[in-house]
Length: 350
Ligand code: TXA
Ligand code: MG
Image (cartoon, rainbow, N blue to C red):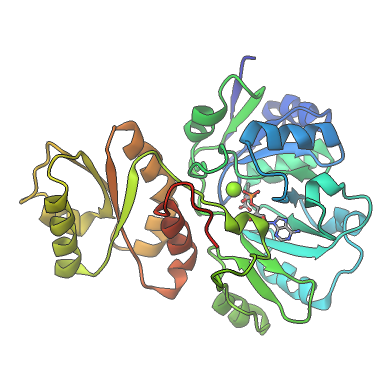
């Protein structure tokens, strides 16, 4: 199969460019598209065979449910039976945007979508190309991150092509995704609102903007995660990923110590540009390949670049990737993805 790449400018979305892909999507084809978080692999949620195809293409475990994407809340009552008050407050504050709601599902939602759960996850992407595509398609669209299961999520069109070129008919290229990690998943099915997957919107943001108290995300070792996807090893490049912690001098010392331990290896480093500038004066730049981010907004920039850094450094053939940790509370989503990327191969993570 030839994969057609449709270039779509988020600043000036053209319906004409998206129409063929939107029609194909509604008719049951698979279309990859940009969102504000990561690229999604889209299928019509009403066509079971297309939803099955998504699982097959990704090599995704059948017990991991999908998020249904809508352009706005108009189509929501077709999918869920009970819309709690908290939903309205959250929708007004954060939607469209990188927040996913887990709600009690109606029978109209196929068990394949929800992986047999009695809930369904729904989100309203703000990225203009995604929003327009969903409107033109006119159907609810399931869209997991457009990566092979276990690989880093895609934040550029080439990441999607790396995993799916020749296997899907359309990739819509909308450039870099803004956020860089997937949406915050929020469980609204009990009185105790709870974050099931951390993202750029944190419990503190939700409290500040809506007054709603949310249990922050905690991974309890041994407990079955409420978002089934959280139990799998994830986001892994081919290279081994090691974390380096500390600020300034302490961070640079941690890097130098790691480099000394692995003298015979090619090493990639994902680090802020200020510390790299100092390190570059001393380390052996023949075997060390940097991927740097802007230190002026470290959490935003590190989050934006993480998955691209993992794939880019892999392509450069490094054996090991050293990646800077962040202790800022806003970096919860970043640290969640990074620690998973550094997980032990073959080990499911609780
Ligand atoms: O930002 C995003 O959410 C991206 C873009 C493409 O929209 N999508 C995404 O989908 O990250 P995916 O399939 O890669 O991750 C969905 C996560 C998984 O951890 C899954 O287990 C959880 O959401 N999830 C889906 N439905 C659920 C449900 N009914 N209850 C609990 N967790 C659910
Ligand atoms: Mg995913």
